[in-house]
Image (cartoon, rainbow, N blue to C red; front, side, top):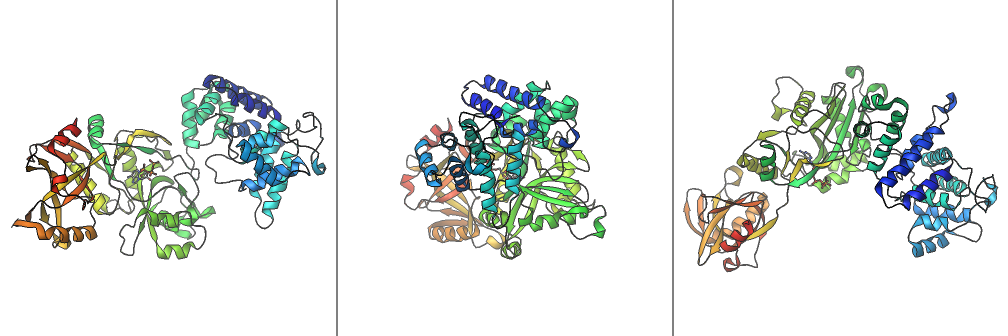
Length: 590
Ligand code: ATP
């Protein structure tokens, strides 16, 4: 297929507002690409036009799962355009036009290319300037692949030369879409759903089969090829591949109340304060005989980020973890967290210092260590598990991570514990433990749900950040236990009701030891009475408290209780007279 044909279709798509018409255009493009394919033996190993077009039309040069990038800055592209446009044009001129027009495609299309330094110019076809017409989609793909592969000194010049060679053979429309493709700014209104529907139409295969194949492969090119060559059977037999990342399942914000209403029982896990990782592990044929865990016959371990970038080299601890604990081919989903020398959790920012590190990894590791915690298992022992319910996947996870069959879940290294419960009090205490351990709170998951790659569905919910905060008077507290025996904690909260104060709950979560020490110092002078660990406080100090919900409750004198109360801060600018009233609480509840 000529690149000009692709550019014509892209222009037609861009001008088309109706979704169905856009799908029809993409369908026609895929059909044309498939029809014109070169099926000779020596061409079979090369990417076919259909595979290329399925990516280009979405503005992708490489499949989403591949970490290859063109690695060129906009300036290289401007230089290449300027050179192809002729001796009177330089990169500044391109930038000036860009500042006026605002979009690189229109800028590229505003020049007349062809004929510079004889490179590929005037080779037939094309527009009135002699440019364009003979460049094929496969040539563009080949050149961009070469361009991505250029490395080392002089590679930017080589990249520029290759791009110049392409622009020099472009008509206006071709240049428009080439420039956008190269700078990842295609934006013609073709999303992933459009290509999915078009593959289904073009090759007469069910959309569900295309969708599933895309979920497991993350590769529109391969799915288009398989749909064309092997039809539905081919698509349905596509599997996850170790080493090829799957899009991460994502979470919506939600409340405990809604989750329990919808699912009756919820699966509850800690929400680790780290960064998402997907681990792909293929054990060595005989693990005992080799020590190199990262490549070749020694087996293969790859670690991918949430955006499917390969971050293996930055996280050797995860590779070591896999070599130590995993004996079968596995794909696991989880989080890496940063830890200090004692194994305590460090904040998320510390993980980031490690995550994309390319140099001095060993040094960085000395400063901040990481450890993986896995909460899902997508593939184990040759079996894809995406369609299995969460609880089954979690059981498989436990089994692959367990070092000996007698091990209790709490003792399994790298396993995120999962609780199943219908009781919101149990959930509240899991939330409190997670916060205490320095994590973000909890994730609520539908125990029966399948794994939906790339979806932000309702089956995974992160507990909503507090909807509102209330300023409450602290009217009581309890002395802590163990290492917290000298701290006041579990603070009783009250609101105003005329001249009286009525209790609405107790807050114990969201407070570090350091903060507890400060609060104890602040509140101790206001102790009015003590009974064992219980302390009554004169109403002097106001806390700002977040909560999930206000419920009716006989436990507190106000008749209401704050669900999931969380300490936000001390309102030192407020006195008890400025605290919330019972009236407002009642209004907020509605
Ligand atoms: P978002 O994913 O919503 O764009 P984000 O990256 O800030 O934003 P959150 O939405 O806050 O993440 O929460 C979802 C993330 O929580 C997951 O992508 C994962 O990295 C992390 N996480 C921590 N613990 C778990 C767990 N037990 N189950 C699932 N995800 C977890």
